[in-house]
Image (cartoon, one colour):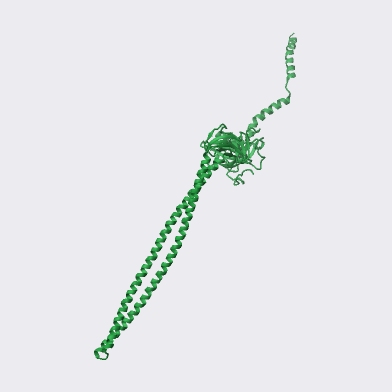
Length: 446
């Protein structure tokens, strides 16, 4: 009986083993589970050795590379009333296409400006004639002065010749006086000895008196000639001074007239500008582009000179991206550094650390970095297309103002180092060796 009971007790246990045998898992599934566990455990350690591309992240927008091709405001050239718009928002315009008509508030303004110009033209012509008249007067006075100076110079030369002649006469008279005096002395001695007659002595005495008179006359003639020479010199200086004074006065009046001519010309130029502005009341497009916003209505809105009428976005094929980066990262960015860009509205999958496997991003190069921040500690980086990379989307899709996200690529390091750097808050480190193409400045798209 006990054996029977033991056999009966073993039946449930056998049944359990049979059930377990029926629901047992395959051996390959267990090995797979262990493999997955091992992979999950080893993957983080393996990832620490995977290469990682260091980068600097920035946000910005698309804009034209050339400053003149960026969004610009069209301002009113003169004050007036908006009469008619030739375009609407979104219109495409070519250079010199009409945009808006502006009329002056005063309809008689152009007529009055033209009358003022006619009066100023008459003043200008009168000033020109006055300047010519005084110029001719200066010429005539100069010629008259030259003639008068020449005549006075001749008279002065004649006076000098008279002085020379008087000097020669005086010298001759003095020589004759000396000879007569010697003759008189000789006759006086001879008469005392009784060797000369009384008549010969009187003749010698008479000759001496005549010689003395001749000397006195020659001295008087010399003095008169010298006085005449000094008078001629004074006359020459007087003629020169008076002539120069008249010429200077005429020249000053001529210069004044020429100044009036220049003032009249300046006034005419200002009036011509005012008339031209009033006549050219049709504002035209400065360049090819699209009308972005209209700031003035067509219902007779009054605008002042310099008020913004509309915003024009020029058409451009030289695209660029304006990125803003943190001031801590600005020293690491240099012209020519590679950049990966992701544009808003353009499907993309970006792997920051592995740019080679990114999809939908575009390559670029740093063209310039601003030398100062925007007042908030951020620096602007201008990125242009990389000629060695695929082209950026067409301007139909990549319009100015489209937001963009960019990554300036730095060094390639291990992911473990990058994780350690991020945990410790250290900045990225760039190589101390200059890249071969570092010196090449990034250029705009051709």
